[in-house]
Image 1 (tube, helix red, strand yellow):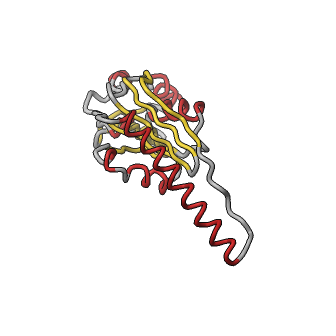
Image 2 (image 1 turned 90 degrees about the horizontal axis):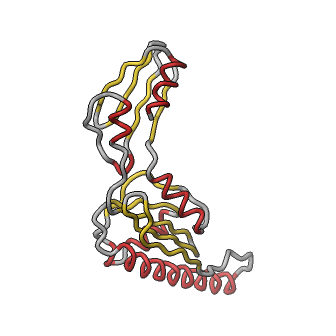
Image 3 (image 1 turned 45 degrees about the horizontal axis):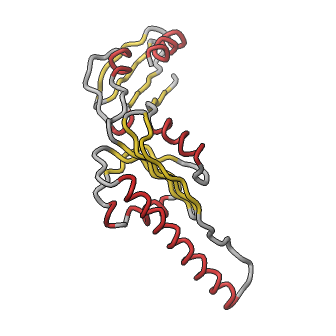
Length: 192
């Protein structure tokens, strides 16, 4: 973050920093601005400097990631930056068919049943790994699928925070990338 602010200063001219609404902001002499927000919806309350902001970027001591798409899921519990429990799984969910009439209805019912079973399996693993989670949960994938999994009574106490992670079908590598993305600072730049 410190290097990023120095580079912004070099590209746009003298930059004044401030803390506004829990974010580090910068306004350059050429009129360009930036707003940097901490991950996990944390609010920054330190001095308006990049070093202090960078020091506040520590992940919580207990947090989680839940990624769900139709037919696949990934769940992880973390202590700081370290994964302490995880599970990645897949369930077959039949794709759409061009058949018409009763066949189309039969395939739609089969797809719905397969998806429901996949969400139940994801919910079971999420409850086992994330049970008693004290910190935030970062979610991603298909909104409907995640909502289905989080409707499990064992998971209703979880606190989902931004950002929403758009991910492909969850695999181990996708989960690891999502963990990194969840810890990233979000910076919005407006160039003059």
